[in-house]
Image 1 (cartoon, rainbow, N blue to C red):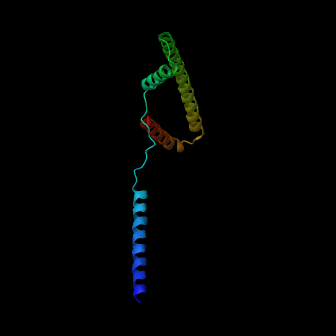
Image 2 (image 1 turned 60 degrees about the vertical axis):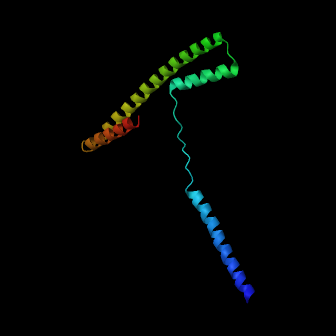
Image 3 (image 1 turned 135 degrees about the horizontal axis):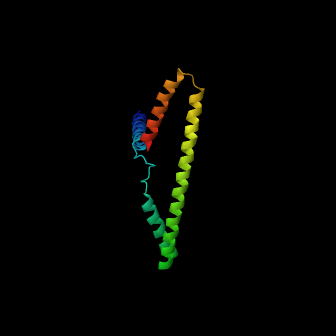
Length: 129
């Protein structure tokens, strides 16, 4: 009889201990520090300096090559800016054409609500920038 009482006490202790382990694991699992996927955004000048520094460090550029690389990066920046400007203008023209076509298909009763909807969308778009 004594033996079965000890066995029961042992099993109860074992169940209690396993509950503590599972509880600690669950607590650790659900209260862990979340990872943020947002990286700090570098400015254009910071990206440029990082690129130039990496090129200098890894390729051991001469001073003349450094000057040439700076000239190439400056020229490329101007070309990128021009391409972005053209792209922005094309997107703006497509949006205006879309808005004009939608306005043309709507009835007189629908037009005021569309103008309201359009203004709200423009505000949301401006707020994101």
